[in-house]
Image 1 (tube, rainbow, N blue to C red):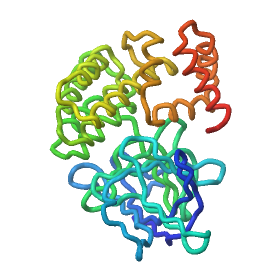
Image 2 (image 1 turned 30 degrees about the vertical axis):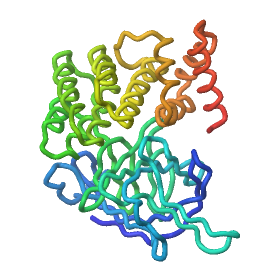
Image 3 (image 1 turned 60 degrees about the vertical axis):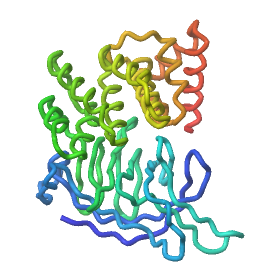
Length: 341
């Protein structure tokens, strides 16, 4: 089942960079394994590796030098009828060409090389297709040799057919994905752990061990997915694996940044959402979040703060904390949520 849309121009901006952007068209094949049709229509069969191929036609960049711009990722935000774009994780970027004097056509293109990622957040409409992603989540697709593959997250894409992504997965399904030969499956298993409704101690140990093994992968995408998965589990063993990984000899600067981001995610979920069981003090959790440079971790908490009163109350309490680092972080989060930044 295929939905076709014309490529049209829509004004936007790079949320962390202040640049105008977006030219995107869509050709979407709706999946039926980690997604389901709510109208009872049968989408096509899945890819051999268990996930789904989604084609996203690229904007016309004829006449622009795209050499050297191979891999990069981007988050597409929808809010209040506007489409905004953010570079919120390591490796994010987009090709931007802005005409001098304001004349001519502004061209922005997400990287199209294998390994690039497109993430959807919030609510918006692009070329007649709407997306609706719950606050604090990202609906993620990664570029393969054949097209874009659904990786993780929850939300709804609506065109002539509505597709719901992010069905709850059982622990055995997660373990099956993590044991797959397909790197797309393994990444999906690691990053979709938040879809688990709750697991026994035994299953948690088995999943943590699989993620520890995944953290030994040389592929930077799988390394990052393992750190994210361990952070989402948030147990003492997951926390210690991330700490030890950060201290290991021979880590590249990129790996160190990814581990720092994973620790910040674990700490923010523990501090603000009360998720996870890691024995970590509020002061240490705040320090880990403050040390993370990229805004993804804070953005996800901020989005939930704007919708969930319980989180706002928790942050308000932390603004009066005795620890300067906890108080500083809580005040920053409060100001960000109230300002809608």
